[in-house]
Amino acid sequence: MSTGRALLRTPRVLVPVVLLALVLSGLVTPRVAAAQDALPPSAVVPSVTAAYGNVGALAVVVARQQERLGDLSIRAAEAASARVLAARAGSELADRPFPTASMVKLYLAEDALHRARTGAVTLTPGDRAQLEVMIRSSDDPAASDLWVRFDGARAVRDVAARYGLTGTDPPRRWGQWGETTTTANDLAWFLVRLPVVAHPDDAAALLGWMGTATPIASDGFDQEFGVFGTLPGAAVKQGWMCCLAGQRHLHSVGVVDGRVVVLLSEVRSSVGWAAAAAALDTAAAAVPAGP
Image (tube, rainbow, N blue to C red):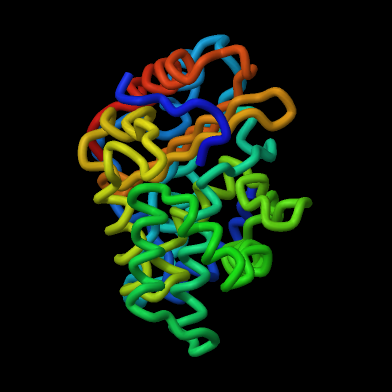
């Protein structure tokens, strides 16, 4: 999403008791066990923040996805709970609300798939095609149409309730879906829990669309910034918007090798897209490769 000039090719405190209950039920565990020599998220986040510099404000969260598993013993559940708590870290701005720009399309798509799964709505092949292009190419007309027909404000509230997102709210102005607010922690928690909360086929569809994002968006904006193109093989969603309250917003999230990376940035509108994208590239490059 962009209301400015396109760049053309240039929660949350987690409660251990709750998490222990989840792992005891066999539902939650980190998706990929960290390699012994891999840096933990708590070590990665400061490096990413420092690499970004003083261009603007940057919220960072690095975490590990969860997956459904079979029954676990009490001891194994306790160990898994500890790994869940240790496998997520955020910067000091991780709980600050940012305008989502096109990140809200992730919430809208998941909710449409969920409601179709439960029989609350019917998705035609054309609807699914709109959902796909909305994610892959960040198509704004598709998002606007789906927002109206599937009640986007309700979708945001429902996703927040189902995923436990405490810093996410619909836009105050009707229909201005890019002004939905969310936090880096909420976006990370949504992607961390997607394989657990969503139906497996719906989670696979959403991550599959993210994994085939187009280099150029439907509006001509260059999507290869931040996580996209920096972390090979990442399933990504990109967002951009200008100029709400005199600020330019550029966001990038990705899932790669079971790891979730969220970068939400805000710069003055006087800072051009190229400079904002270059800073986000540098931040993403500070995330070490590998699981």
